[in-house]
Image (cartoon, rainbow, N blue to C red; front, side, top):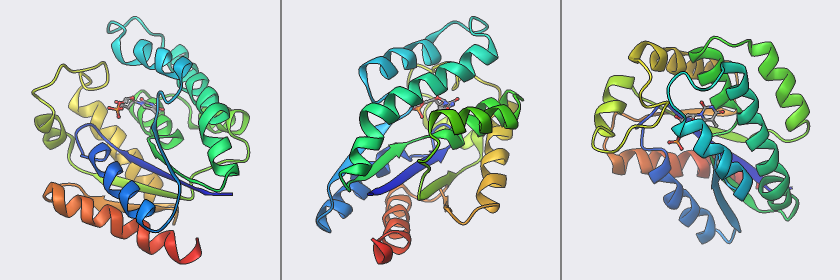
Length: 206
Ligand code: TMP
C-alpha cells in the first residue's frame, strides 16, 4: 500500500497552496503522487460538491449534508484513493473525514458517534497515515479569502468556525497521526514546514 496524506484546517489557512510543493518534493524522491480533494475528486463527487458548497443557506438539512459528504467520499475512495494506494502511490488529499468531524460534528453539533459509524461503512480499512493540520484563528483566515465569492461554509459565523478549529485541535492532540502547522506564518514558511513534516513523518518509513 502507498501513503495517504491529508491536509486540514479552517477556511483561508493556505493548505491547498501547499499541495503542489509537497507533491514536487515527493516526486523528487521518486514517488508517484495523486493530488485530490474533498468534497470532490471524481465526476459524481464534484457534482455533490456543487450542492454542498453552493446550495442556499438553510436549503440543506444537516443530516442530508452529512450523508452527502460521505456519499461523495465513498465515490472518491472507490474511484481514486483506494486504487492509487493499492498501486503503491502517495495520495495527497485536501480534506477527508477529519473535516466531517470538525465541520458537521464540531461546527454543526451532529453526533460524533454517527460520524464514526459512517466512517466505518464508507472507509472501513483506509484512514490517513499522516494529517497536516494548518492552524489559524478564523478571523485571519476569512480576511485572507475576502476577495473571492464566499461559499456556504465561508459564510458561516466566526463562532461556527472557531468550534471547527477547536474540534480539529482536540483531534490533533489525541492522535500522533497529526502534525500541527502554525499557518499564521508567511506562505513560504508554511509551505516549508508542510514539506518538512512530510519528510520527517513519512519518508523514513516509506
Ligand atoms: P475547500 O475545498 O475550500 O476546503 O472547501 C470545502 C468546504 O467543505 C470547506 O469549507 C469545509 C467543507 N467540508 C465539510 O464541511 N465537511 C467535510 O467532510 C469536507 C470534506 C469539507
